Image 1 (tube, rainbow, N blue to C red):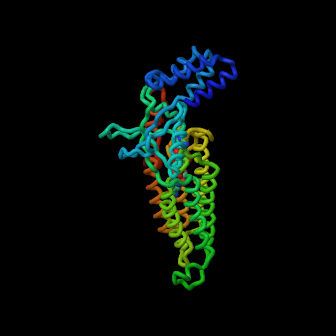
Image 2 (spheres, helix red, strand yellow):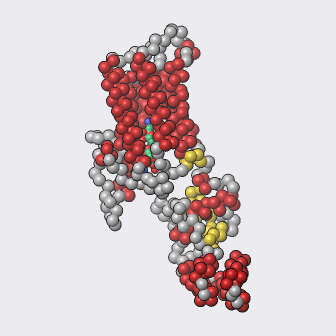
Image 3 (cartoon, rainbow, N blue to C red):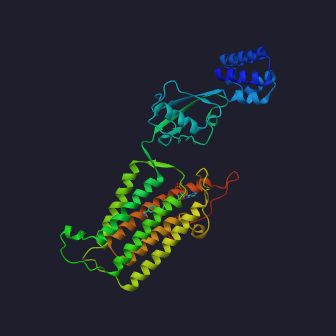
Amino acid sequence: MYAILITVHSVFCDRKRNPAVMMCLVLLVQNLQILDILKIIPYGVKGLLCFPILGGGSLSVRLISYLKMKVTIVSRSGREVIKGGLELNDSATVGDLQEAIHHRTKRYYPSRQRLTLPLQPGSKEKPVTLNSRRNVRDFCDGYSDNLTVVFKDLGPQVSYRTLFFWEYLGPLLIYPIFYYFPVYQYFGYKVDRVIHPVQTYALYYWCFHYFKRIMETFFVHRFSHATSPLSNVFRNCAYYWTFGSYIAYYMNHPHYTPVSNLQMMIGFGFGLVCQVANLYCHLLLRNLRSPEGNGGYQIPHGFLFNIVTCANYTTEIYQWLGFNIATQTIAGYVFLVVAAFIMTNWALAKHHRLKKLFDGKQGRPKYPRRWVILPPFL
Ligand SMILES: NC(=O)c1ccc[n+]([C@@H]2O[C@H](COP(=O)([O-])OP(=O)(O)OC[C@H]3O[C@@H](n4cnc5c(N)ncnc54)[C@H](OP(=O)(O)O)[C@@H]3O)[C@@H](O)[C@H]2O)c1
């Protein structure tokens, strides 16, 4: 009401309108709110109601922006997260709502919040997640000015770049320690190490791979989600750092036996081609999204994507195969099998998502027939 009075006052001063007319307007809007009429008429019409009295569209628009919406925030168990709910402007976005929640709770910064629409009791459907760029009003029923949203705390978050940086930094630093430093004497090996060329090339290959991944993380990938739970840093680091140490230990071991020169060259040669192809796949994926885009998914196309959905995983798996052909360690093959298993599961999910998104219905393109990850098997 105070905001309306200020607007009216400014208009009165600007346009020399009759104070009595302005007071009528104030009373009208106030009474409309008291009678709750504004809740059952479209909000575009709310402004028009004032139009004849004011004789000016710009002022009606200014009045609309003072109309409020009530948002009730509940936990999944139905407990009110913010006592009394929040009042937002009609034009507020979900991002504004998240900021308002943060303002009231301090602890729950926007990326920590997941807001969904409540489900009917007993419903097995997936709840609708509120996209931060959408208007809150889009989720209101009809012309209602009340909305209830379900709040979930996603826990402490880190940016995807932070997560990837730490998980790749481990193998990048750990591997050279086994190559350059006399660590094997602490494992009871007193013999002098003879370093074979394949061990040196493996070091370069390995470091190039993880350096490339860090560079891609910062300069190539366009992630759909800004953040990931902090707990993933520990989980992913445990995976990469442990495998990095395991492979580095056996690759640089004093008793390591090299393969033939020819096998080594074929392995590294093939692996390097796959690493370059992997980089190219990542560049193609990057071009599917504009820098200021909404993080949506497109049909990947071009190069290997014309035959396989997750060509970046295909080339990743094959580049580790090349490394293993050249170096031949059980540790390396174990990593290859585990990584291929993980990426196959992800590829199946990504393939399924793209087929669902591009189903050829209602004007949507149809996802073309493609292999998932490892042609000609899957
Ligand atoms: N050795 C291993 O164990 C292992 C395991 C996993 C990955 N990797 C390597 O790390 C790389 C990155 O992994 P990742 O799982 O982040 O790869 P990814 O999800 O397949 O793709 C990389 C980037 O492209 C985006 N993207 C993917 N499909 C898209 C589409 N259809 N439309 C628009 N954008 C799309 C992704 O966005 P989103 O943010 O939406 O995902 C992501 O930012 C892999 O390609 C692989 O080389 C290695």
